[in-house]
Image 1: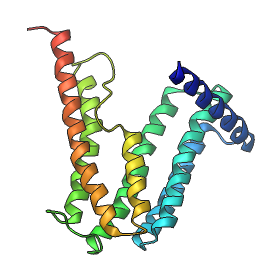
Image 2: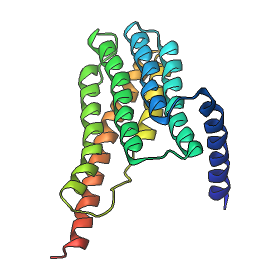
Image 3: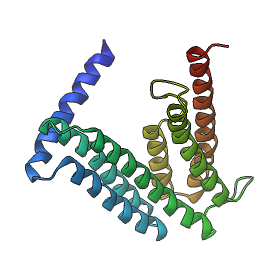
Image 4: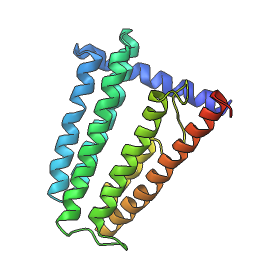
Length: 208
């Protein structure tokens, strides 16, 4: 019951956001494209080790990602193409932020933790990619009829943790290293979890 009330509350907030931003006259897809601009600015600040500013523009980009869907629902313009564009842009935003962190690591600013910091960033990028690929490949290979979801870290959780890492880097770059190690490990676990889900789904579809 509590979940239902919270879902209704968030739905009402989404409607208010959609109503407010629809007055600017931009289409939902235009809002989706605009969301990458603050991410580019966040990248600039990350490269220049200005983490508080990077975190701020990271938030702005994430908020605009919410705006496009809200505007689409209010204007009655939800489309599969729009959802596809939104998904693609989400990946670019995540990549830009991680690219900024990689620049910080390659400059030798981030401390090592068993492995060089840059290696953890690459491992995280691979885990993030494999999490998405495990879902797409299962559908492409017809192992399952429905989209695979679940695992320890969905995209939203990854971005929240990534944002926290950027924010805490303002106090110490050691925190950013720890956050990247956590993301690297758990994102790859999530990819393996989705592979297991796909395997179970295939057995139900084609029992041996």
